[in-house]
Image 1: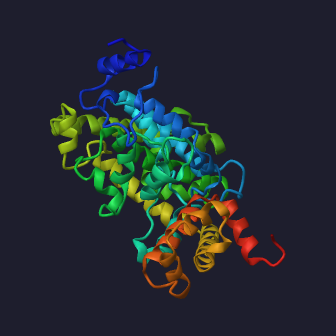
Image 2: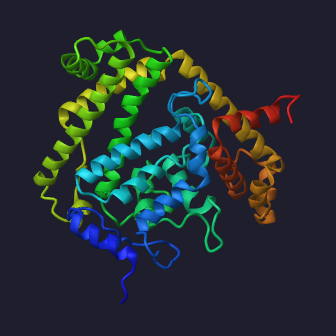
Image 3: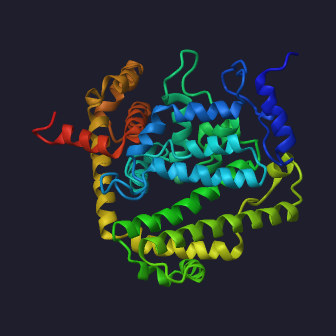
Length: 404
Ligand code: MG
């Protein structure tokens, strides 16, 4: 067989990757068969498909913790995703895991997230309760498998099995029918485990930064958090005169470096302890391999308890959250009641449903049934895809007399 430039990557992976990494040559491939690319591996191609898709760009207008309009430099779901990605790549490269796969999983990990952050997800979960609820991971899979519409040959992005698997591995509902093709795979790949930890590492640190940035917290408040205190002492011992914003960024940097170093150390120990010498061992492992040490896990738990009490439940954050939930609940009820109010692209999915299904809906909106379920799913997709601003504008268009 003639070699292609993409074979160089396969060779490079063979020479560089650890034996427990996922080589692109062993991918289970795509749902719709495609010819290999001339000079990109399957995971490199996935990464580019993700970056070019609509739901990726919409992450820019979606709340991480603080609503997008509050200032111009706190985290949005897009910048959170980029931070997770770069941290995950650093870890993956160091562990000699597949960096391209790690990057694709990280870039896509929040694609199914609705507007208004965790609060938005809670509201949608409640709206869709009788139809199995809402989970941003499964929604992400749906988004990349069905809702993205870019290619003439197939719906969705036709991503590789391993990137799609990561959504399911992370989902709370493992019994959902879409999880079926992934049930026999075993434990998550190390690349997916890295993203999971990088996600937690990134938000613990950047949520402190944002909370300080908009004045929900003062530096002194953090002295009650042990991990902060230790990181602050280390920063001061290096730079005794450091103050203000430079002190803040030095401590945050210290917290990131500390957690990454700890994660690398503990993961190396786990690899040895669990005798992980090849990919099959990863699939057969009964506990996470990529993990923080016990000490850092405890430190992070205390830090997260502090964030919950002082930031996520701060009245300013709660006001944004409850307002967002109100928009979503009201939009959901209105669109389910009057599907004709949906924009043509979404209404078409509804009018394409068989007549008897559609007729069942108007009289029994709240009762579970195929018609209600179908329209609830269509409205759920529409709402989950919205940015914060778009949801607010839709709310105004529907409920404010002067808006159109
Ligand atoms: Mg995330």
